[in-house]
Image 1 (cartoon, one colour):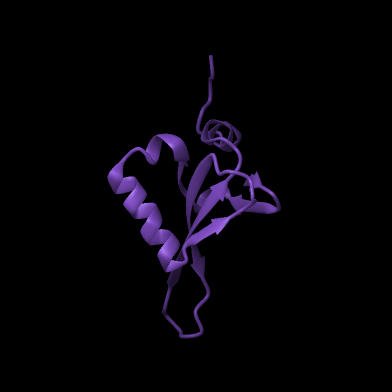
Image 2 (cartoon, helix red, strand yellow; image 1 turned 180 degrees about the vertical axis):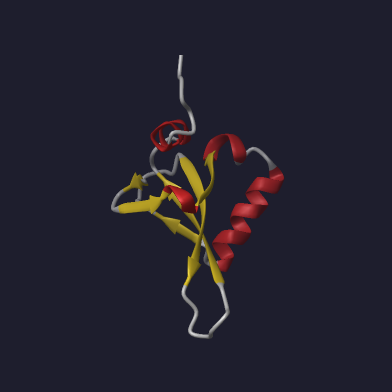
Length: 97
């Protein structure tokens, strides 16, 4: 199963590590530092020019040219779709009142 994150970005559900609301997590000094470091290191992909409402941490196994070597690529997507909507689409929230 796949999850549409906004724009033209779709990821496989198995690659998703976490989905966070960007406004509530940015209140934390540690979370801001984490996102700043990820941005500096090139792990962040901004899906659209709209203000991001959520960020999604993903990891994917990438083929290596060397035998018996596994490479795990981490990508953080800034999504214009709310974390609640993304979680609901992904099936993380089964019943919403």
